[in-house]
View 1 (cartoon, one colour):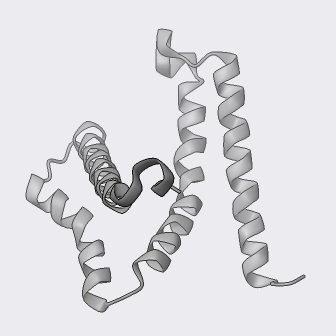
View 2 (tube, rainbow, N blue to C red; view 1 turned 135 degrees about the vertical axis):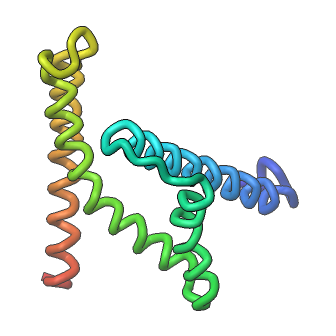
Length: 136
């Protein structure tokens, strides 16, 4: 789809974009883990251990010769099932004035967050249904 716009450089630009996207998401995941470990459970994990924990799965996939596209799709499916366990408590806590003070969510933000959480849960249930009852 990029070829009409970028010509022969389309695949190169796409590859660089994909690498940048992967790097950004790895960085955010590592930093989120660091904030949680230090801020909530008061544990300090060395940076090399955090990097190792976030990079090891991809090296295993490469080392085993698994299909990277299928593995990526499966990882996103697993993440979709984990997402409600983050969104629902986050919505509950950020909507409570006694916890958040002046930074409490507005009503519309809370409503939208609950709608998003509901859509994700429904889609996960639909995915499970399709997986266990194909073609019905």
